[in-house]
Image (cartoon, rainbow, N blue to C red; front, top):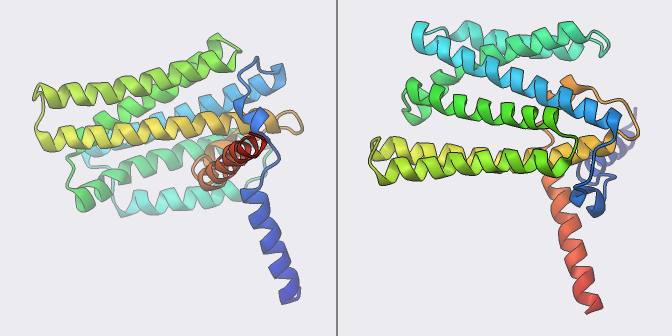
Length: 248
């Protein structure tokens, strides 16, 4: 392929990443989910929750047995590469590899937090446990209701409670100021990420109207889709406000 052809494909890929098909109405839709889209979203939430549990379990094993090391770092990367080479219809094998990769990353996570930030592993496990419960609440909310609004509100209420608990810990000197400061930072980032996950859920529900959703890939690409989804959502909202300002 010529360089001009490669350049065109790269430009199209960038456009497809940042300019998506869903509109502002799809983003703000808070109605009832379609049945097949609802089933797909529940699978995504369950897979994300299980992956976070595996990540937290790996971090816990690093706390009690120092399980993390060069082997877990290499095996996590190798398992992800292997996962991407497996065809989508081999679902069970892909899920097992995803859980093992999450466990390996969790076991290795403490190495980086201790070296870069000097955070004690006990605090890391506690913070990850709080985040895991947040994903579990999101999945449980999807099990109990097919209404988007109720599912998303439960998720955001829990995230707000985590931030409030950080303020309480700091105000009453339950922990030292350094630990309380890290709790506030981590749980604030967690709340922002859960807000992003709500927007990503809207994209999943939109895509499920036209194609089958690969819930393993959706779980893997939660982080990879973040810049594109945020830019597209900001473009839609700002564009609507500019249009409304012109009309006024």
